[in-house]
Image 1 (cartoon, one colour):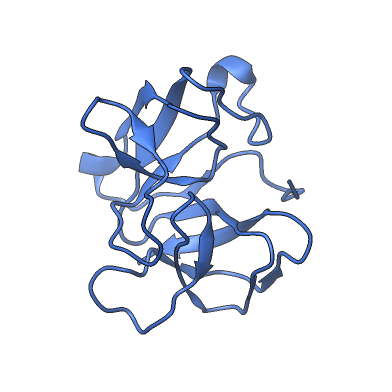
Image 2 (tube, rainbow, N blue to C red):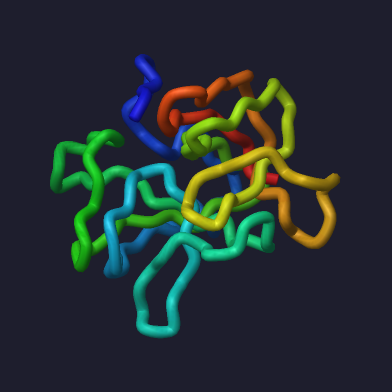
Length: 151
């Protein structure tokens, strides 16, 4: 996976509402999860990629594991506890743009259903837009990190 040379954290900037500053916890992953993937809760008390492309999302992202040195390039293995953060409007995170996608600065992004981001198919309706691209990125070869502001 491509890297952001100047960042080694998923959460780049958080809103100033202190109610959400420590909204981080860990839940079990049923499969490999990468920091920067968008996730959703399961009824079994774990997290998974959303499963529905362009669908409404909760702003839940996997963050780096402090037990692995806090490196965004080290994945969580199946059945491992995943550190997650519930992001809110205005937070800035490094999400993962799906392989083969290209976006311009200011583009609306949605989940592609597998934990990665893709350009939103429509204007921000029905909660399908997760965030706005803070940079232009071309993921021609492999998934790449992209800075987004949560919408």
